Length: 68
Image (cartoon, rainbow, N blue to C red):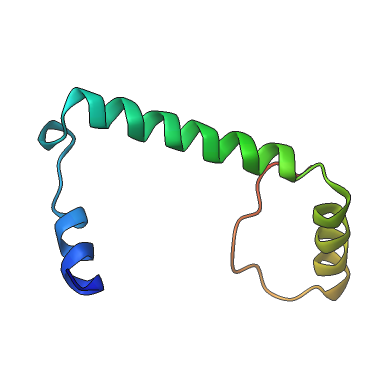
């Protein structure tokens, strides 16, 4: 399956299309990702990068969560 085909397949999915096991797995993956992002935001390299970006200014193009 090519990337475009996969993207179309995923975009067309409905929550009800997924099995309960797949739903639970997806929820667990999302929670894991969120926890890693939040915890990683407290690490020194992430703080350094955030401070660098803030000093450079510019237009807001993305949301950075788990900071301030």
